[in-house]
Image (cartoon, rainbow, N blue to C red; front, side):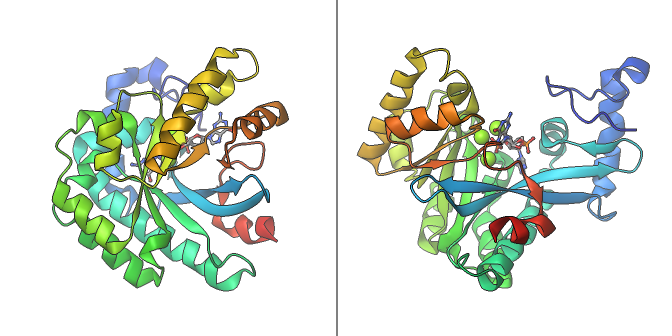
Length: 277
Ligand code: C2E
Ligand code: MG
Ligand code: MG
Ligand code: MG
C-alpha cells in the first residue's frame, strides 16, 4: 500500500526497511519504464480569475501510479527524473498530453475556448537544444494556439541556470509561448533578469500566502511583488490559496489570479468537464 511522498520530499513507503538510498535506486529503475507501462498521468488544477471567479486555465501536475507503491507525488520522483535525464522524455510526454487535453476542453466545453495550459518545465528540458521544436510540435499536434501555452519554471531553477539559452527564449517568444516564474519569492532573481526573459506571469509561492492571516509583514512583501509585476507588465498568480480570509486579503492587495484548494485540488482530467459546468 502506498504512503506516497513525505512532506520533506523523501520516499516514505519503504524508508524504514530499505533506507532512502536503496528506495531511490529502486525508484530510479522503475521510473525508466514508467512511461511505457503507462504509469504516469496528469491531474489538472484550475487557475482562477478573481473578478469573475472563473477558471482561465489549468496547470498540469504529474503523478505516478507505481505498481507496488501506489501513488507517488512529483516532489518525490521529479528530482530522480532530473538527475537521470529521464525528465526530458517524461517532460515531452507531459507537454503533448497536457496540450491535447486542454485543447479538448477548449473545443468541447462551452465558455472554455480561451483556457490556458500551464505546464511545469525543468531546467534540463529548457537547455535541450530542440526544446522549442518539442513545444511547437506538441502545440501543432494538439491543435492549440501556442499563445495559450504557459511554461512554468521555478525561480530557483532559473537562478541555478544563469545561462538560459537566449536562442531558446527567442524561439519560444516567436512562437508566442508564455513563460511563467513559479514559486516566486523562494529564490533571488533580479528585476533585470526577469525583464530579460520577458516572462508573462509570476506565481507567488504558497509560503507567502499561507501566512497572510497571521503575519501582516507578508502583505507588504506581496505589495512589493505586485509593484514590480506592474512595472514589468506581468500577470501575478497567488499559489496555494486555501482560506476565504486569504482570498479577501489578496483581493484587497489587488491580486487578480489565484490557484488553490479553496477552489479545487488538482483533479483527474475526466472530472474537469463536470467541474467547469
Ligand atoms: P508547483 O508547480 O509549484 O505546483 C503547485 C503545487 O502545490 C502542486 O503540488 C499542487 O497540488 C499544490 N497545491 C496547489 N494548491 C494548493 C493549496 O491550496 N494548498 C497546498 N498545500 N498545496 C497546493 P504537486 O502536484 O505535488 O507538485 C509539486 C511540484 O512538482 C510542482 O510545484 C512542480 O514544481 C513539480 N511538478 C509537477 N508536475 C511536474 C511536471 O510535469 N514537470 C516538472 N518538471 N515538474 C512538475
Ligand atoms: Mg507550477
Ligand atoms: Mg509553484
Ligand atoms: Mg512548487
